[in-house]
Image (cartoon, rainbow, N blue to C red; front, side, top):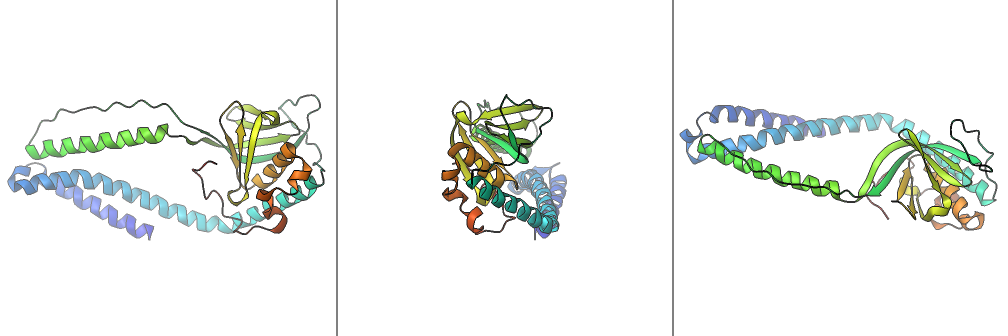
Length: 275
């Protein structure tokens, strides 16, 4: 379906471009219709080409997703099983054996218990400054009208992009090496290690359906970790923050005790939201 749409939009872009090349030199020959045709060509041709490219890209993404689905299901099941084991173990207050961590320096008495690849992101907004610009046009009336209207459309789109850029949302997405110790959560962010001590965590929200966990922090913006390995991470975090007794009865972690009510490969269904 996406491929058919892409072809149709590409044909529309080609037709609009041809019409523009024919009418543009002398739009006044056709009177008001000429002006309309010039405007239509200037707007429709690039828009149709853009949408066509997006449709082709989406079709390719869907094809790749179908090809990768069996391997994803297998990996999701393996990570889920590991989460179930972690739940069983930590519910008995029996942490995993300490890991040997190279490079990163742990504090005296600190023990690393888990090392996982997870996607890291932070929730915040931006201060964005936007100033619109005018334009000076020379040419036949049809060209001037089309250019002026196109400029207004461009300014409205730029203002909309500025508002979107400023809005609070999950940012800084990157795959991170995550280490969980008995004292803190440590994430490799670009070329440095970022530490989040459990004493600074004010709330933890496990979300097994989307393979993610959100931490609210006392002195900085919220942190989210998500990925196939997140079940083990959220179990460990709840154990470290609440203790084994509360872990055994945590309602958000119930699926790790009774089995998931959703397909294991379904993740990130609520990418843009924050509790």
